[in-house]
Length: 272
Length: 281
Image (cartoon, each protein chain N blue to C red):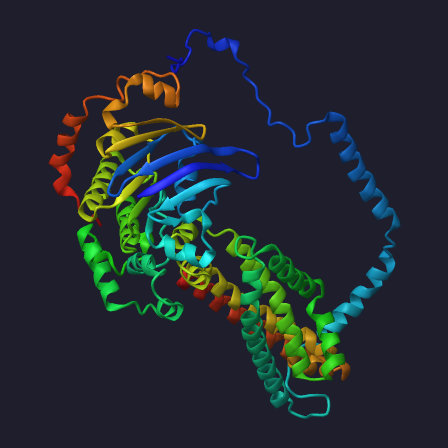
């Protein structure tokens, strides 16, 4: 379980990105974090794995107080949290395999990683994950040879090979076309279900958020303004989060749309 | 509902039809003062420069005569002795100096460059490494060579030390600057896997900077070879020493041979570095 207690982040410029946010995420729950740009969504998930250090408040992953860790203990704790990024954040000049295996860096020693001599079971797991996301044949390609959707799958493999308890997902679909976006969201959802993973997914697309999460949390100017089930996102709530707009078209019938996507779900696979 | 559609009610004639790029200095008075200051400075500078055109004119035939004495390039000196052995020896020594100085300089540059990157090193380390870079960049190779000759005596070792120090200033600075512009997101991604600092450098930083660094090392090799001719003139060994001797003996046709060989080797390095850079990209 992930628990945020009164987390506040004030940047050096004086901007308060998060203001007294408290949140509990039980094991295995997938939540979508929505809110306008600059609401603090990115800051929130970066505070959890401490790419950003919170100014005040405490964050617990299970019994570990993440906000109180030394740098060595923090590296160990980071292994328990996989992160997936907006622009994929692959190291472009490394091969797909190296990118996936880099998820094991917290577990192997320096020289083993320097000579790319990862334990046999890590290599096997990397192949298994690549096969799971349909990129088995891409292992030796350089990351910059892949398409956007393929890169994001590699990013997912890199996060999952850490064998995490929690996924931190930052705008996974922002650079993808609508169809690939859905495939990626569905894949993340399925993998979370398979492994019983909890996930925080930052997402701009309200519709995708409703389709692929069990719970929605809304942030506005660093404050928590909504926490509820996907169908609780009525126009009034969206106005509260984002401001005045015509919201009826955004929240059509969710179920119907879901079926529509499952039909072309079979086409999911590597494209060259 | 906020108005998101365009307002089409205004007639097109009511908009201005000219546009000028806003000036760099917005204040008009200040702008003209700056222009005036620049013009005055150049006028004053030309006024104080003492250019003797008659002397320059008289020098022209002397220059032509001097250049003519370079031809034809030979390997036989004024006493009729074949000096090709000395030239080859000098060139080989210069090549050896250039290679060793490049390798040694780069090996020393890597830790300094890492330390001089804002996004890698804590402030005290950063300032210390930037200090090393700044001080090695303060002096051109000739000055470094004069110091080194005073310290270690005449010969190629002094030249080698001078070139290595010069390489540090060049390579560490460019490495640090390249590290500072690496993409933030892969760096964050590798950090968030729980990787240690050295693993992070190896997996996130190194792949992003390596191709450019390989290109730069060949470029530096080429600079070091050229500089080896210069440091030789102040006593640092190599082809520069041979060149200096030929000048002192007025064997200008031998100097021409040496200069031609330097040009050919530099051109070969230039060509191969371009090729190598394309290949590593």
